[in-house]
Image (cartoon, rainbow, N blue to C red):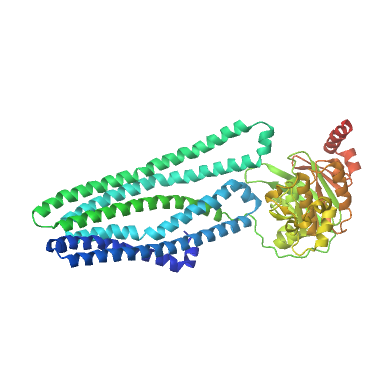
Length: 575
């Protein structure tokens, strides 16, 4: 509730008016049986047509007023619920953006998608119905019970018994189904995750002919969701027949005892009709209340899941305010750095120490899983080192102002990621105030200018979500150009030329040499040919630094580098 209350305060008027108008509607509903009873007991026996018509007009007027109150209440309830859901969704997205890579890795993308969509919708529906019914239904139930006492106290005891039985049924079923709805949402996470994985990897699935096995895997996950939903649905489905049975037994008791009272002259037939109407109203409202409680159970489970994300604090604290580097020629220094993902995982990096000077090109090479990406992710502080220290321009990365740190370091990730829009809008992510001349300059260096010029709209050519309308090589070159537009002090190319042919890769490396002398470049690559001209090469092996030096030095002194070079040289010779 601590996340709902601030938004409900923004809709305080709507949150008050919605239940009040519903109570006003309920008041008209409670008066209807009394008007009908008076008409049957007084007007009909007397044959007073005028009185009957007046009663009829009064009933029509109350129905119209009740309808107007209902529409008004639903408008205010929907406005408050939708506004609150909008605020929750915005807060959730804002909080997710504040989380670090460690928390996002732990929570998972599929879970976050489910919580941003399905869970927020469940909370919205629950809040909408709560504002409409949380006062109306109890008001009618207890109001009908009180009014039944004004008619006949003995008959009213039947109402008390029926209400007690109904409450046991409703709250008993709710206690059983609430944990089940939490499990339903967890299973929905699994289905969303499997769907996302299959859609993202559809080409791989078809390339290896694994369609049937993936269909079977999805069927198992989907079946688990189905089973849980059916179990929760079957238990919830017991509510209506049990409540109807209890109320119908109560109606039978009212008619049986009422007939004896009418025969004795204690009650009139109109009073019995009023009592039956009241017990019918109780039935309808308790069914609504039961459905509301079921819906609130789902909403509470979803709100708990949203709270888990919102209660997850960022593991990194960005308290630094440094915006200028020290008077040093050092660009990046690693001092006995270690990195561990999670508290109990193995070390991804162990005792890494090196120094990169301003203007140098640093090559990073190693086998798959050797820690290359982990190393460069520490420079812009995507992760915090678990031991040792990382400094930028002579200042610890933890002391830098986060916005300034990210401005100083431009990163091209392994997986090229473009956003829906145009080529221009994607390039301007690097620096929003960049001119067209600067965009074309970055495209020329990234070897992307030629294919962009061939596009009918040039820089304004549309880009679909994730760059679906571009090839892998085109996407990589555009992401490199985007980083170049930023004109940062540090440029990190994390294996970002893997989709480029050798000629384009060589042209790119030649163009990178024309960059300003103050820019330090980190080249992560699987190819020794891509980094052999670097000023300094870091060779990683299982998270450790196996060698540091230039190409010729490493060929003489580093067995790991020799092995990589020989395997690639022999492969190229064979081709």
